[in-house]
Length: 282
Ligand code: NAD
Image (cartoon, rainbow, N blue to C red; front, side, top):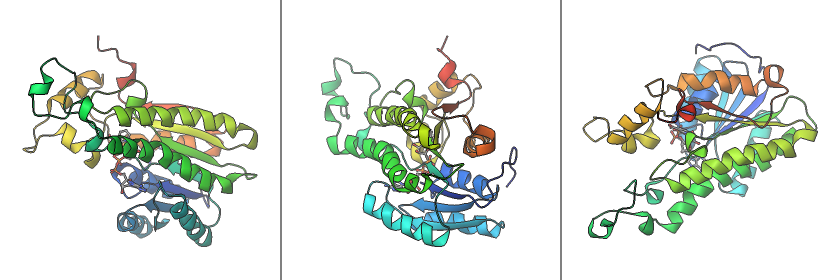
């Protein structure tokens, strides 16, 4: 794979959660291309293994592992497997996350005549759906950090990279749970950076802007492939006027993971958003 620049991650053991998915499989490939041994973790082991096979075919070192970021026992079992395969974790990328329709309202704004309409409003949001999304993004970042950062204590050059989102800065309409959960991920990034600062484990995050992926396809595209009204609003609110590509996330990821390049950087969240988070709309 073509990298924007090379950092030296040779022999580093890098654990990537959510690595069966669109964004984190790509980050795993970039990290592997810098010489790391990459453990691709996902609820869907086959998806993770498929990407690992591609990395190996390209001459890298990688393997897929099954892990549920919401279940500590599952992570601990996976941790033992990673230890046996590659040794202690140097870098953890907390990529597993996402939204769920059960935690999404149909309407952007409450209106006085909503009761007469056939739709899911704020009042019908499913508590279990909200809890699921909150847990997947926040607990799903905290638990892997507990399990894999234990390997980092007392060793040099170790770090955690979390994956936040634009809605951590200002919530997006319709998705209160995902917005709150990603705000919690950004906040936790700062908390953990301070907490780990005396023992040398750096903790940072990236906040991807808008990328058209499977996770948000239903919000962005109609069934006939035409853009939804939301897509028009996103592009109008993105000064660069386009969706991001997964390649756009590689540079910041490699930079923040590299102890040589970012050794004095901890507690930051880098927006990769075509200017979305800087633009007031006027
Ligand atoms: P994706 O749906 O393609 O990938 C997510 C992966 O996480 C899937 O492979 C899924 O199987 C896995 N997963 C789900 N629950 C899990 C669990 N309990 N344990 C382990 N793995 C689990 O999503 P993506 O678009 O690649 O997003 C990756 C990250 O980037 C997420 O944290 C997401 O919130 C964030 N993000 C995405 C966008 C975007 O535009 N797609 C924007 C900002 C942030």
